Length: 316
Image (tube, rainbow, N blue to C red; front, top):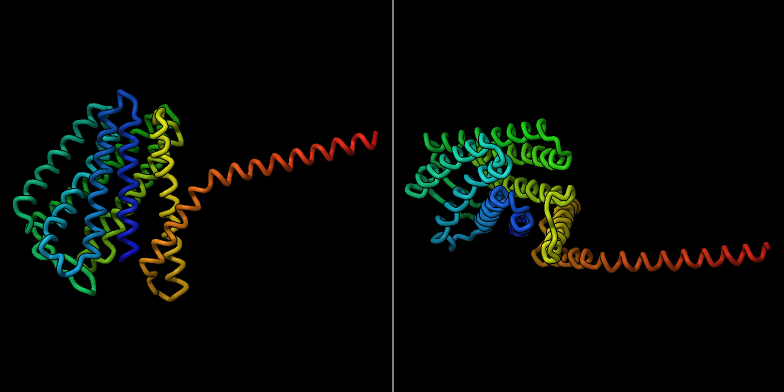
């Protein structure tokens, strides 16, 4: 679980940076709408960090675990609501729908804060894996039903915008978000609400999928120039997000290959950190390498032109 925790925390930082860039790079009329996107990334960051800490928690962490678990449940409530707000805030019907789900989310959050045992009754920290004893009752079923209504609402809103949009760049961004959210939303329902009845080892898949979708959408926003990235530091922030995302993707591939080659063995923390640092170092060198390759190509091109000129003079 060490690699999973490192990946979740790394991706959570990238997710938060993506939200910050959207908020600061948005046009003046889209600031409020972009605030919803930043809220989604902030709640997703809390969700991932708390889950990663829960997965690696030791028995002596038990006194502090209740607050951690509560933060996990609370942050999960508002991620999709905030995404819905970002998607639909331009229209009156979208604002009404968002506010309805936001009000329901507040009600669930207040009820849960007042009585956490509505969702779980015990926290189990064991060497074989950490888990919760769920309280499967009326409140739990309404909690699941809330997400089963919210995820389709986001998907339907995106579909409506895609069919009605006259701008290709906005439509392309919405298509990426639709595909990503449909996949990640379904994965979250499966791995975070259904599978925990049998196992808690895979609860990290849902938040990782949601955050990957958010980062992919942010890159799409950059690709189709939906953001006004005028300041140099905002461009640098976007560059960091893209490079670190590539590094995370590399680490996932490395982990899969490592476990396949060594028959399920887990790489040590030192190996994981070394690989991550090395791939970041290589990515940071890429601009210099591109400059060097451009210089070498210019030298080769100049030499070829010189030889061609000399050959022409000799033939003459």
